[in-house]
Image (cartoon, rainbow, N blue to C red; front, side, top):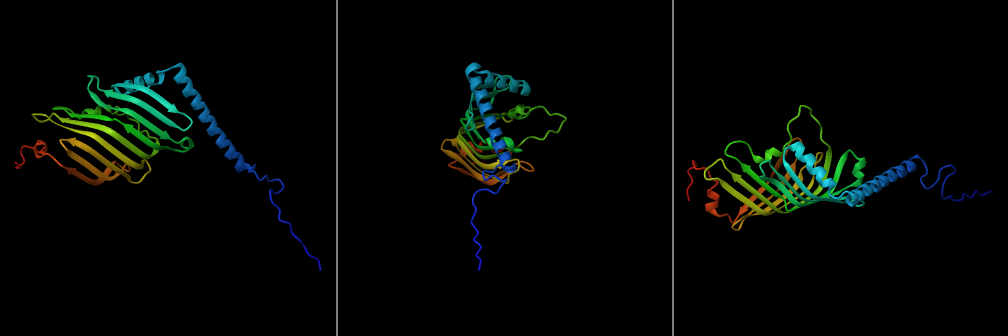
Length: 261
């Protein structure tokens, strides 16, 4: 009787290295190598710009945006942590040509994903906005002042980039609204306010959002809901106003309504 003993063979089969030397392994190494090269080149350019041309990025960016939008735009500082992929912007101010403030912020920190460079969808892991200011005015004649920031319409329909934001956090905000269509003008200020938004983008379903702020005089505003960008901007949720001052509230009630306190 003859016994056949089969030995277990480990490692690689002849002609096929076990370390992934096939076409798939080579493509993976090329992909990782290309990504590493992009990171190194980006880090080198950013470091060189900060060392040899300080302020160049801020001035160039402010100038280009001001020219395109016909506004007065200033930006104090732009820095980046190239390896982890974090962009920092400081003290942005946007004013109209008469010098009236429109929007601005103290700090913006963007944590973006290097892998999204290889994807058709830009991925931002997180965005932290600190100290935003919004100054909205409805003049007696004309349109809302914030509409001045919209670029002039063009005849061409250009599809914007696809993007996804995993988390947005806004802190220490100020929203000032003034309605000059009535006499005397009515004004309200929401400060400080905070806003949190998760999972929103061009291809996303409803993003979860929360808004909390102080209206002054002890009054408070709270909103919890969802925001969707497709096929059009929509939002739904629950709004809660607490500790309202009735005399202040009545200033916003139209005079022709039969309501008196």
